[in-house]
Image (cartoon, rainbow, N blue to C red; front, side, top):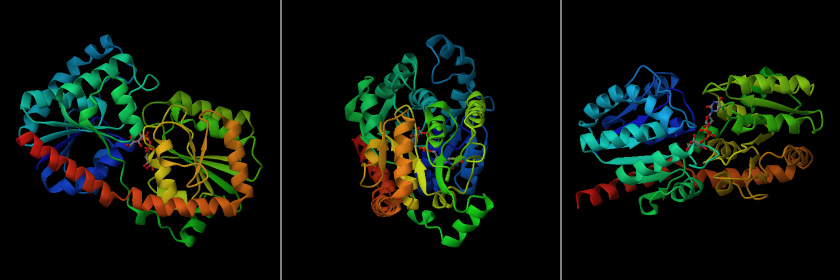
Length: 384
Ligand code: UDP
Ligand code: GLC
């Protein structure tokens, strides 16, 4: 089966990193079509996954756009659609990986008469999307998609609540390569030295800088923790959240935490950095659809504390394989950090258990098998 994957982004967010693992087994008979150029294209090339950029101009419609703004972007969509339809005729199936890819993919599926699969990486709720965008996603998926793969039960439930057909949805978690997260002690020491963090209790935050990812919650919590607790913020503003970045820097200065917070920007050495941390904090203030960083923290053998909402609740069981705190409550977070600092043995045991279970539950081999079976099953259904 020849697959045409569509993704709107030129930057490697979680949905794009997940797509690399999904597209890889099909790389001899697939193409990833992006709607904008950027580092994600190079990353796909590094993995020898065929990739093309369909449009050179980014589409201006946003998650919060209303119908009028959406219609205004039609001018940009038509040339893109024409290119996608032409290309789709050489493939058996269109696999849309993002919302704008769903819009183009649905129309292309209609015009090229190719079936559509939609990989839903988002929680279609009002915290994340305007009403218009939710309606567009659900209507197009219901009408054109043969299968909706949700990245968590939370995403699946929100889809159905927004009016999505339950019988076309299924849940498949993101897959990971557990061996990538086995880092030797000398690398960890070297990295801690390079970062000037030896002897500190390092709390890592790994996420793009965006208000709903809640880096400000960790900074507020840090001010309530003992002075040996230091934070590293790994990630960059991928989608233009420059005001938030400025706010974070101002917050650090206002709280006098300049020596205890390091902004490392976007990094490619996530497993090494995670291994160098004593605790990893996930602090999203809106429900996280899945939360790759939570699973990656577990695979690294570093204790993880996550915000109790959305997909994170399917990944973490409090006190068993990590810790959960109320989203947007820095005081609660500070308490967990301080407890982990004091009770290192307990949190290490929890982290070891998490590493073992996560490496089985999220092994990319099993996840890819699930996807392959779904596509095969679905191919049989279509042909019937
Ligand atoms: N990530 C990265 N470099 C960074 C920060 C994050 O490669 O500097 C990766 C991180 O390891 C994770 C992904 O970006 O795999 C983020 O995915 P997640 O599902 O946690 O959140 P998203 O940004 O997709 O909402
Ligand atoms: C999206 C979600 C994130 C999820 C990722 C991979 O980017 O925001 O929670 O982990 O997709 O499915």
